[in-house]
Image (cartoon, rainbow, N blue to C red):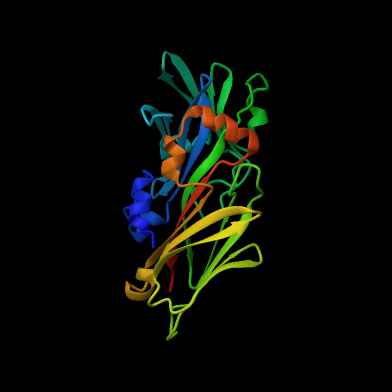
Length: 280
């Protein structure tokens, strides 16, 4: 059986478990993009604290070398619209955002009515949101693809999220159900859409594990760790990791030329890390 912590650490993903207070405030997404014609990774972190909303953007090249980072602090979010510029490899990267009409539903990441754009020499490195047409029609379109996402969800026994397991795939509803209160023999069930893809009985003995299922012919491996649900505090956190295609370690280490081949057939791997917090 694969170990969840070692899998995450090999993938270069932070494995430290946040406290329940900090867990409620962050969604982090990683994108495969291009900067000056070369492959790069863009990490976007949405967060919410007592002072308000915040956004951080970091860029690394295909070898993992840090290129730049910028943060939009809560007091800048009070303007709801703005821009920042930073130097990258002798050029200027502009970060533009407009959240004046953004809709938030229970989390730090907006659902619609906004845009965040990274523009380098009229090239769109990354565009998020549904309102980018308000910026300019001169910038070339972005072909960035989300490759990883880390988020938090809350519930008593049912936890829901969405995932797109490849860049040509549709978004799928993921439902995790586990009732640990007053149950002598709790079980774990995971559904993708209406299809049950995983059922774990005798969960007290199998609180950590992994299994592979298929979504539209694409293999997806899920690793789970529900120890804290069963043996931890009343508001314990379970961790689930979904990986499609290949491991993130292989994805990050393959050459850029392979990126182009897989972009054409739409078979990027995707990793979802879900922290599921039990609410009493």
